[in-house]
Amino acid sequence: MQFTDQTGYSIILDNLPKRIVSLVPSQTELLYTLGLQNEVVGITKFCIHPSSWKQEKTCIGGTKKFRMDTIDELKPDLIIGNKEENYQEGIETLRQKYPVWTSDIANLDEAIDMINQVGTITGKSEKAKTLTQSILSEFEQLKGSHSSKSVLYLIWKNPYMAAGKQTFIDHMISAAGWTNVVSDTRYPEINTLEIQQLNPDLIFLSSEPYPFKEKHINELQEQLPASKVLLVDGELFSWYGSRLLKTGQYLNGLREMTDQL
Image 1 (cartoon, rainbow, N blue to C red):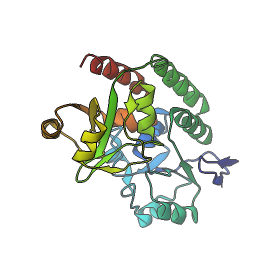
Image 2: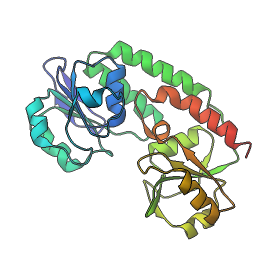
Image 3: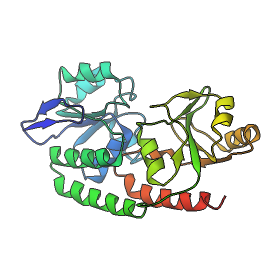
Image 4: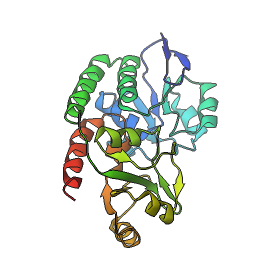
């Protein structure tokens, strides 16, 4: 069977995969949700859901630095990665030995497509279809949503980095009805003066990849008194697997709360 991934790369599988390595935390959780507990043999050190897999599965390193020898020992018949979260050199090296299916996701439609394709490749198409239908149903409550609030979403500190256009986070911001004040693409660096000039109503500090805490809220709030600074769940803004089941409700509640500020 031949499958073409979201980057246009084709792989051939003779049978349903029995030894899967996942290189992406959100897609690891998806594989668990699809019922592939026995098939998944390797995950990254950042794959924290489900928590039990940290002890049960072999760690193949980080998302940006794979332990190639460990992956070789696992003898995978399918590796699942992502264009943004993994590094191209590592993906290219793995492709020389193994079928590597890579996602490329910047919006909900692409996330839904990824889930359905992974379901097909792994023999879990019906479960994937049921899952995507449930996710789309959850996002129905956001349709037509609009808020007068503008948002700056920060993912990193020292230097500050923001989520710009052509990112999944930006799509989630728009889905909830907010306006992203950042017009640059990807994840531009930004300083306090630039933030003041953008003058966002809301500043969201993501819980990941940088672990923003309450102390960072207070620090920024002092520097930017005109904006309301909030800590938000980074997983629910950026994970594009089965965690999307919770995202629609979370964004809806967050929008309603911030509209009162």
